[in-house]
Image 1 (cartoon, rainbow, N blue to C red):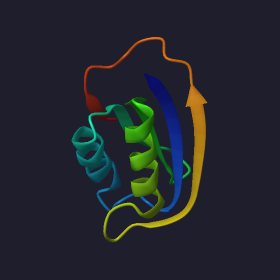
Image 2: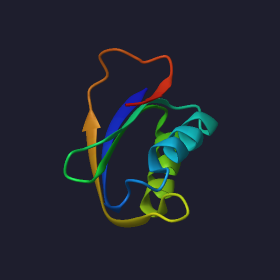
Image 3: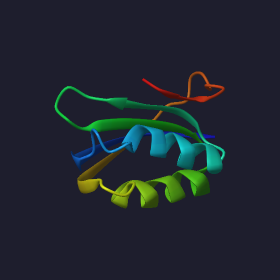
Length: 89
């Protein structure tokens, strides 16, 4: 089990990015959350197996229709507690 934090920068707020990320994460069997940040970026934290997280990263590089991803930051996290769902915050 792995945990990874992504920060997505570009035109990523107001384009259903968080809802689309939730749908994609659930389809991959991932849990975690997506959250708008005050600087206009979106934070996505996912928990699951490495292959699913890699697939999520590939999706995050483009995002949903109408989004424009300019930068994607990735950080590996320690797993302390495993969330049961994928939340939009």
